[in-house]
Length: 116
Image (tube, rainbow, N blue to C red; front, side, top):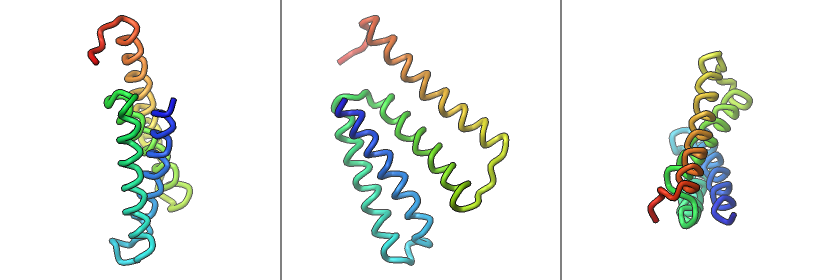
């Protein structure tokens, strides 16, 4: 369970870092630029802690998928980015991919075919 807690922290930090990247204005604003470095630094550190117990393929799929979805929603709600049917379909496909990876990992674990 600690691995998934570290993954949640990694996701939050990555979303924070990405949001600060927008505010940094190509690294011309000091505080948001420092937020980028701190956010991504903590995100990768937390992801490395997560990988002690969570398989890489699953952790990365969840990290990048959830981060992408929430960042897209922040873009729409905060920055006024366009949200179309194609955008919605992309988010649905990301969620489906994460679910499939999670399901395939559990199936491999229960069948004993995973390598340690």
